[in-house]
Length: 175
Image (cartoon, rainbow, N blue to C red; front, side, top):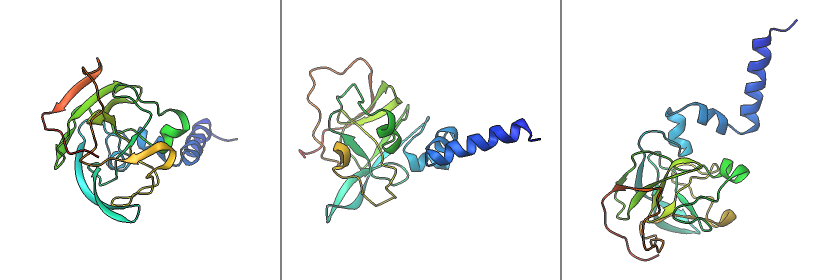
């Protein structure tokens, strides 16, 4: 006879393995796993870093763990359209109090389906589960593009209701 707790634990481990560890990262809160997934419930830093993008070395935006940050072209400044299986591959960068280091654009926080999602110049930010620090593998995949310090702001006459300024800064150059 098997013990009920062992069966439940086995089912939980199988679910984590099936999702590729994303469930484990979500259950881990703000542990070291959050730095690699882009998820954070406290503070996140958006900074600049160098990476090879389409065969060229470029300055891009990365999270505090060094993972490249992406934006999803169909998103609006107030709404993430990344859901379901796409959201599992492209975790949102979340933080209630993000900071910028070396990036001159405007950071904001949008309260959406992902929680406190970080936006740069109005573009909601994501990481890609196949990336490692300094490695860009998601450029152009599923309409995601690597975010750069000069990412042009999304045109908007007023800030959406869910948007909260994160840090004062100036706008970057055109992209």
